[in-house]
Image (cartoon, rainbow, N blue to C red; front, side, top):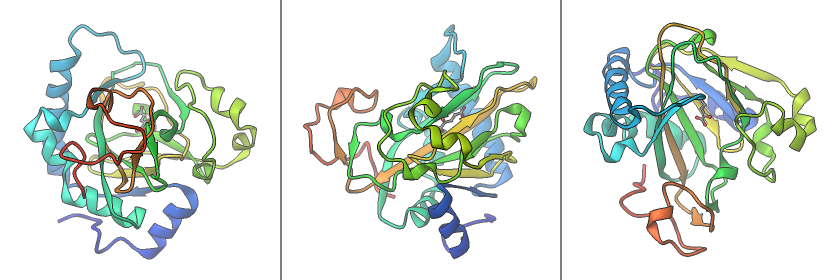
Length: 249
Ligand SMILES: O=C(O)CCC(=O)C(=O)O
């Protein structure tokens, strides 16, 4: 049923992911599922986003806790299974978010790494699955990645509204290969949490709808830092991040 599964993903794809920090995996969910989840994502996002101005994208975190339909995508066995094969170690859910770039938004999500934003230690293999719920050609706001940038594990958080911030912090990355990956509905890119990535503006008349499911190592521990997911939890520094909010794959 799926073009790529944990059993059919090739060793070459896994080693490419390890070397470059990202990979495109076609058909991780079916076209029919993509259409079904596309409509559910738009509905869920409209419920929480009423009247808010969102210049870069509309972001709705941990939607799986509130929406039964989207929960099925966040906990989708094929998505989690492929992510775990790429990571090569036992993983658990960190959080999900729906990311919608509104039609003709004209604003890029600038180059950044994800992990510096997270209150994590002991999670060297964390990665995101960016699932296209509609066709995402370049003009609709697809993602680009900098090959090998995941090896830079010491950079502080970069401003995703400032296209120069990453390169100011790490000038070498300006000369590394950049890869732009348009996706068809149901395709997915996986990127390591330290792989620098960006998304171009949506210049089309339709929203760009993506659902992102983020996985972390089962060994991940808490580091004191503000984050919308962990702020309400009263975690202690060094404590494992686990429990029903963070189900194992
Ligand atoms: O979809 C976007 O515009 C950016 C996505 C992103 O930064 C991410 O998934 O980490």
